[in-house]
Length: 173
Image (cartoon, rainbow, N blue to C red):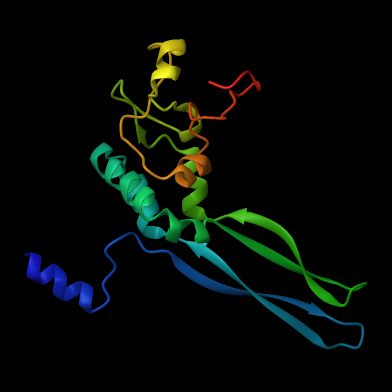
């Protein structure tokens, strides 16, 4: 089995959930009737969305660990920017930034395992650090898996890390 995996990886088969990049085109018609276009990427991941749709705790744990380990790769695909043509500047300008479909789902769906055996949204969880546990005890849900990358933790707004503030802006936890 290991040799097959190595063979497939050498062929270019993805070993982590894939991000699809779709190039879209914004267009504008000038006063002279000239059509101006600007391409921009939109990021999607049916692979990650499929894992979330399954609502399987073991798969979600594995997904969290894969995202954490490979966050340097994934974070570049978490948002995309739409452009508009600014007539005053005669140039394309960034208009709005949107979360990629997979990133929006990961932020809003209860998918991370908690120490009390349920799944929760990232913003509802606390990291099980001694200082946090000593203050909050067992009154809040804690993340049931260990994460390594501070950038990953920050992007998910997990509470209980150093310098983090509660929802109401209370003192550091």
